[in-house]
Image (cartoon, rainbow, N blue to C red; front, side, top):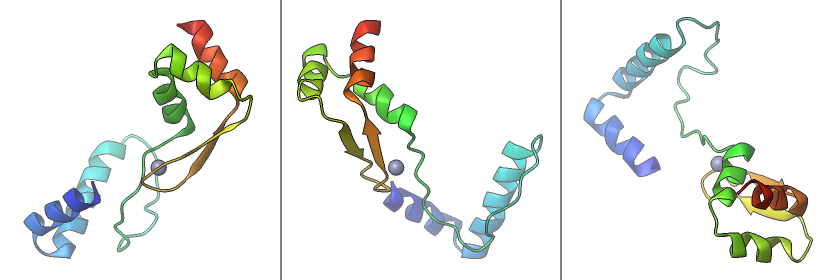
Length: 101
Ligand SMILES: [Zn+2]
């Protein structure tokens, strides 16, 4: 994904143009909300992962898989491959997913 972002920057050409473009996009997206730009020159990859996203992904695993993950009774440590953020999911929470399905 990072490579794809770089590729897109190449198409835009000058980095200044890319920045201007990003500002236009964020103005467009956030025009109804108050916001403050965090940095105007620091355009970087930002991961969109979240704890909810991690749990939702676990919820798509086959039931047997979830059962074997929780059988040890240990808190699962799941690390995002992109931003290396670690999420801790308690076995009880995973079993809750089993109950829902
Ligand atoms: Zn992430």
